[in-house]
Image (tube, rainbow, N blue to C red):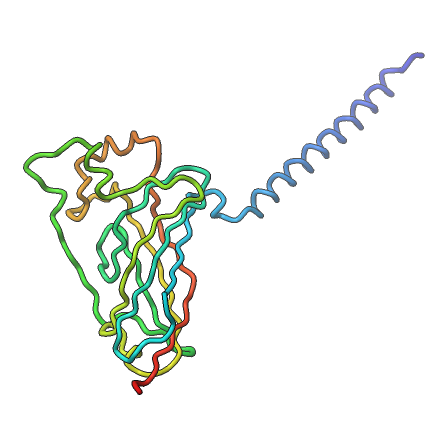
Length: 215
């Protein structure tokens, strides 16, 4: 069977067009898939959950909350061992809002606390200092502690009613270059660690409480 040059060129041309069309479809599908992926799938992920042992409190009573930080990533992540509430310039903080209907109440005071912990006369080995401030969480493990929502910082907590409390957890990590970071001196060593520290902010779930009048 013989195919002349013109027919051969036609076959090659049609084949090239089909190949180009298939390549474009493949690239378009890959691009669409990438665009449909949630941004968090490409980042370090944690979740933070708050809970209370009881739901009824007296007017003006402080609210004790249990906080759990869970590693939702596929890698080990460092998180702060200290969960600060109300300190705006701490390395890791959790800020709360108290909602009543459509009104959102935020703390009436903001606290700044400079520790100068990064400046020392001598520096112990990083191996002994890192576990004092940060903990490595394996995937699907959590770390927790208790924090207090001060009634004196939220006026509405002195008034009977049903309230929703939600938090936002923030972490600046152990590479923050300021006087509040006790590990600032070890920045180059920290960059060589096999695990990374979680940096960012994430909102917690909500809990409902009730302020009841004194009998």
